[in-house]
Image (cartoon, rainbow, N blue to C red; front, top):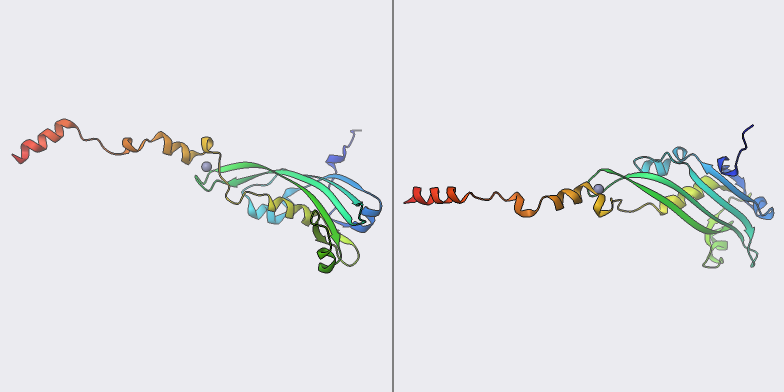
Length: 178
Ligand SMILES: [Zn+2]
């Protein structure tokens, strides 16, 4: 039987976050990116699974926290040449779990507030999807040396586009005028 590593596991969507915090639970798992529709809509192609590592725990001030990171690879459309360009997207986050806006206001600045429902349930896919979306480039573009548009601009020197008049033609025209 093949050994199944933790990173091959699917990340559960809805979890009891309060319970995971009390258990100091760690999760290493993937999400099928095709199921994250906001990422699918925001990109040209997103078929590399999002790898997610999460650790649920109380911090020293007794806040419920999720410390984690996620990463994936997406294909977007270059805003300069309209060709496709790939990006490695990753995010690290320190989340403070809260039940209300009021509780969120009291979190220390180092924690990004995320609201659970009244039963302590949390949609982990939504959390990860938000993190990836926040890290997508606003204006996706190839690096300058790799962009088709950039290359065609530098290959065609401006002078090359201007038709140089053949000096003999110029002479011919002058003769015609005489
Ligand atoms: Zn480009």
